[in-house]
Amino acid sequence: MTTSATGPVQLFTVIALVSLPTVMFGGYSLLGLLRKGKLTETQRGFFRAGHAHAGVLLVLALLTLQLLGHSGLGATARWITCFLLLFGVLGQSGGLFLHLLPRRGLAHGVTAGGGLLLAVAMLMTAYGVAVG
Image (cartoon, rainbow, N blue to C red):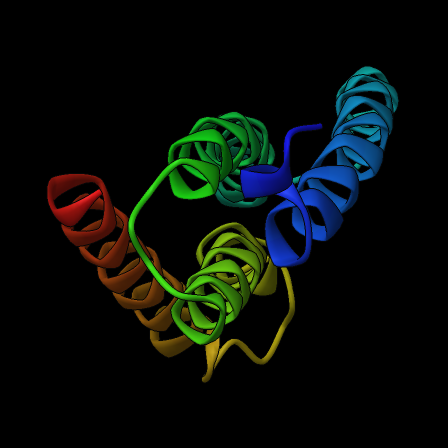
């Protein structure tokens, strides 16, 4: 990787790439649960949504990390943006999985909070590209 993609960008790119097989395994698990009829219709919808969001958001994170690596943001802002991306992906998709639990009081807040973190990460990246 080039010098602009070292530090947090390199670390979080590795984390995102290593996370992708877990999403693939989630798809395999979903197929098994669907075949066995173990999920209600509502659970099936949230499992699919959580799984789809996890995959799409990881790909979005990989793209964002590449932009971040060539942005004009300083090291501290890059670290912050990377953590916002990580916790945003986990919150947005993970909150949808929390809806599978019998007690889902936090599910909506976690999902919405993840979306907010991702939005801030996107805006920080956009600023970094603009000043780049």
